[in-house]
Length: 325
Image (tube, rainbow, N blue to C red):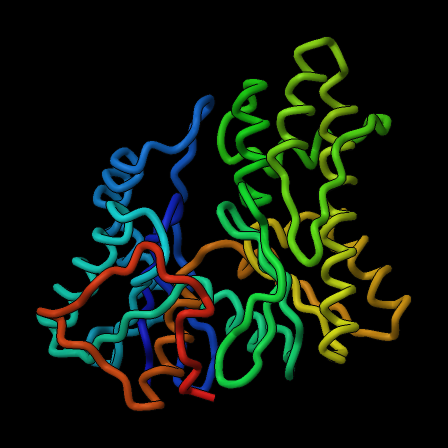
């Protein structure tokens, strides 16, 4: 049996996943950079990845109960992400590929979220709602590429929640802390949908102003979620109607939010569509999704020379031809 080892290092998470070539998940080891207050400084995150990469690799190999002679492929996150963090993963993957004479593939992190969602949830041709730190996009496969039908015009949903949490002293990552505090009353925030696109900057500014003027943080957290999630449900429903697709797949780190899942599920049921949410273990950044996308690209004939391995920090999901389907 063939195995692929995937290395994720785009942002706050350093992960190593191991999968078989037929999609069986054997290991999903990871460590996340966190702070008690403040956010991410890329050089600090890269240093964190350097310090723990060997530990995470060892944990994954032991969990999967495999040795290097069993590994047929190494896959790494080449794009998009924080350049210092991407470099750590790329260099580590390339060095391992050379040391053990193993084939190497570089993959697009955002596309990995889509394809691991397909694998885990069994979705056939869904519309994807991709919500992570920097990303908020409505995506669908059409004409040999993943097309972006709508997206944020400014800050991503996850980063918006993280920035709010950071500004009110909750630390990083902030999304789960905002969700836990979202038990108050609704106060009005800007609802900004522009065609198929959304904007969160005005909402963030108003939310911080309300908090600083004495509005209870529980009320502001509740209102942030309700307003932002309603905006996403609106554009996702419009995309389903436009494309005629009958499945919605929620992916990315914010897919772990239970309130967002509930609102989208209600919307889908109302129009006879099926809703999928990637389970918590695979919704955020992790090495399993990098490994699985590596398998898909390798099977379709792609490899890269370890000495010529590159990173592409600004590559979009719709920049990549989908040649493996």
